[in-house]
Length: 269
Image (cartoon, rainbow, N blue to C red):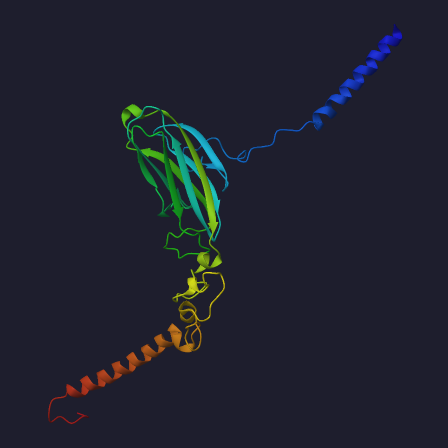
């Protein structure tokens, strides 16, 4: 009897030690692509839900609510904000809009995209998009150019009928950026001069044809190249213009002073 108890205790200990090993060896479910994306939206700038670029944020809200998200954007990026709203089965015509603000709460203009759309009574959803300007590395203090930092997205419905207020809606938000390069972020310098044939120098077979008219046009350039010499410096021309203006003023003063003397009066009188 005692031997049976000892064997049972040994088997129990072996079973408890093997259970964690079996659990560790079993495959765990993989996280979804947007597992780190928020499932709620804020109701103000201070409570905006943070979402990383490339992830889809979701939120369930009521018609008439203000939904806020925030995302980071660096210099050289051109963010594209896309929002989708799943409308209730029964609703009147609704107008939805997304607005993007920078870290200073300045509203940023959209280059293109359907920033505002009206969904009819039979529409199941509405799609919105806003392509921002390229984020710059610096800007003048008086300008509203986009700068690196945090950006806020506000999604809301405008002019909602009273009967539709409070109806449940499902919203999705996704932000993606295209890298425009440092030239677009700093001073907008061209990578190549604007001359005919720059984009069509290659032939139809992919090889460059030196005898083609496009190749001849693309080869035209100033004698000293696209970077001109000292005569193109504006400060030199400004100084020269100022000196000429000063000389013209002195000459005009002497001319008017001499012409204003009465006849018969000697110059030293």
